[in-house]
Image 1 (cartoon, rainbow, N blue to C red):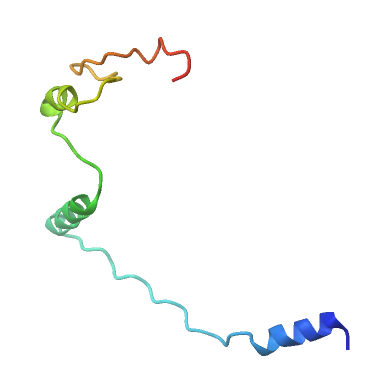
Image 2: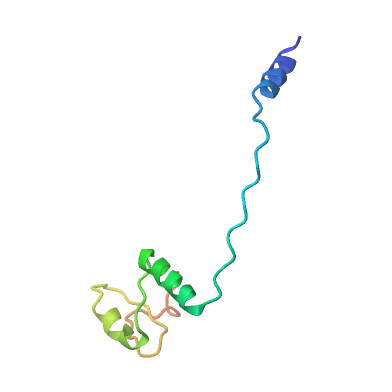
Length: 87
């Protein structure tokens, strides 16, 4: 018997048996309050910080960053992205 046949026989001998397929997830809730609660929970676990649009200029100014690039009206930046040679 060749090495190839030995390897294939060993693979076939250790092949896992059949498994049941995973179940389907439950249907999503239809109530907006449930969606909102789930969305808020995901946001709470996220590393993303969401800022109220009205508070964005103050937030950007007080980040401690030395370079701020902004294309948002009302948020002042100190670097023009169009003027950058290699943004």
